[in-house]
Length: 319
Ligand code: ADP
Ligand code: MG
Figure (cartoon, rainbow, N blue to C red):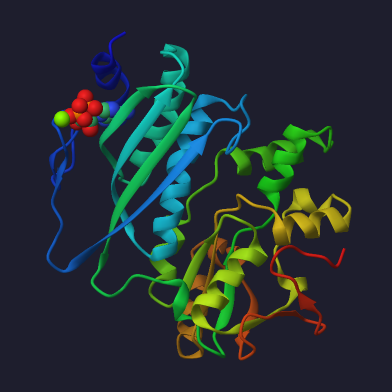
């Protein structure tokens, strides 16, 4: 199969949105952006054996390569629009490509993010995606916006993906349904874009947790020049992680990677409205889903747990 046939078969997705003036097929893509908006863009590379285990199903690779990029847009409060794909393949394997393109396309369609171009080369398997989104001028959420007294919130649960990786790379054993849950979190993370549309109305800062809770909280604190007091007991553990020895679960929760949950701060003046909003969430989903886990303090860069113990940013050392 020729490179151009490959692009046509797997990466040309038909009807493009009206803001795509020219997509796949010319020397470059032409995209339209509205006068009151700003472009928000991010890029991530996935290398086989480094960023995902070599035996990862191609559908999961397609999904995750886009999901982690969409998660960065969610953290900025941006709405996804377009992405480009640089793909390096060791060979042309139709079965692999079918799965990869399905994982990619399914997620892209769910969040209205359209593939507008890319590059295809031969070599060791590597996937680079650059995502582009838009935000109303001046409305992007940044790491630097946290202020003393703001409440810290978190979406979802932490540590599931890290345990999922452990079950793949070691002989660490878990009950099957819990193992499946953790591996699902690792392979098919859900970018928190729906949540982001709510969060961005109320938050002062936001980050997506990709390198472990403590480390990424540290990024907000450093950028905002503040500290935080965390109530460890309020950090959300999934049912699956609750079945594990506490030490292992807490370590995964605080320092494990690949969570792709959003960590954000809400100023006191917005808190009542935010709480009201998330409690309204129909079936109670929102209410259970967002957790208040602490507060922003004066002591720059330090993280204190509920009992006054200092937590290390480079990894949790207390267990
Ligand atoms: P050029 O040689 O001008 O760089 P290419 O031959 O690399 O162009 O690509 C031809 C067209 O196909 C371009 O529009 C490019 O964006 C698109 N393309 C190439 N590889 C991919 C891919 N993996 N996914 C999506 N579009 C791709
Ligand atoms: Mg060209």
